Length: 322
Image (cartoon, rainbow, N blue to C red):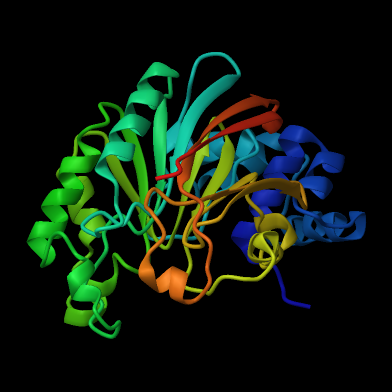
């Protein structure tokens, strides 16, 4: 059995201190014996019981920023990543955001008219921010026959600038990760050309939150945005289920937003609210050739948060038949 890190023990005990042992066992998927063992380990190492809140919090606080401590206290998690986890707070207990994925701008399959209508819907529906789940650009994959003829914009600068043009149409906040198509330039040049980060730096209100995976702290709730480089599956839900299962009990996000597969679905599994985002583009020749369906559209999601948990999760799918 792998030994938990000091940071992991501290995170679990701080949660137990704020929410109680029963809540900590459920959230981190651990047994009562494990929690008692963590308390004993902490006591032996620091010479105090974690139940002595003032001493324990001072010790734990040495390893976390005030924002991270606040997130943990609300039920959030501090993720091991090189990217900052943006914290979004809002008034009341309910917020509304949109989830776009896989527009593949600079591809002939990207429909700018539908993109513009989606932005209009988000404004009309009072969306507070938009999450974009990767493959913002198309890249230039020379290994695919005829791919060059499926591009509307050629080269790094042209694709970057067109991506900037599209993101600027939304006047609010973006939270964006990249996908496998976006990383074509990075792999090709082997020089760290991160095109989506470059795009976000040119768009006011756009945050680049990770490569392939990023996290958002929404009022203490951990939202994981995941793209991946895996393939599709015969059963639409199979890929999403396997991604949820790859997380250990205490590392599961509260919500998982999935890109890459171009398939729309949502379900609740292992206490995770899961949404697969479809695509903001039409079915490509490559997908049709491999008999892969393409669900074109986007989601608007309402989330109600109380006591560090999602107590209501409502999503609406806006399909396109272009």
